[in-house]
Image: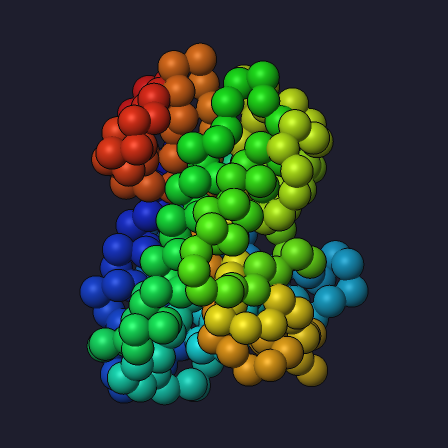
Length: 263
């Protein structure tokens, strides 16, 4: 799973380099396709949903712009200065998945959008930092919610879309909500791998699915941000499988134990 996570991290770094006014969301999807091919990796997203009667997802990335929260379908949309973009990507290596999302601006962002992204990213790391062997999944949920609710601004936290277990399939038990009381849910044990992913808006906490049956937008048209990492907890500490450095810099800065099994 670390190998899959490193492919995801490489794609995110390449997308940040490629994103610019005039680039299409389809162009950014192609960045992911090229890197998957280079590594001989599969896509967690391409054709997802067909087994459950949904339209097969047509991209290797979910690219959501401005009021799109998650599952935006890449295509001919041309990005412009000031767009707020979330890029969610999954890779498969030898049958094991890695899944992570970043949010970034095309050129300069408005102060509100930049703050939204920063708050969402910080809540992700707060949630990661709350994971402990012997703890409960909702310890993560509570830390995410507390991080967001503790701001002077009021943000919407989507409750219907959650993080999840991940391994030989992209979505596995348990769900990892972004709100909740601590001390509940499954126990965090060695070998459990979770995708932690807060989705936060500048307004409504309600998402509406468009006619394409995939793209989720905010009910009130407010902008949204989405940050995600795939993580595990070892007897040495936390390991962020989808970060290039395994999460070492962010964890160390927060006084949290960095505990890779091997890297």
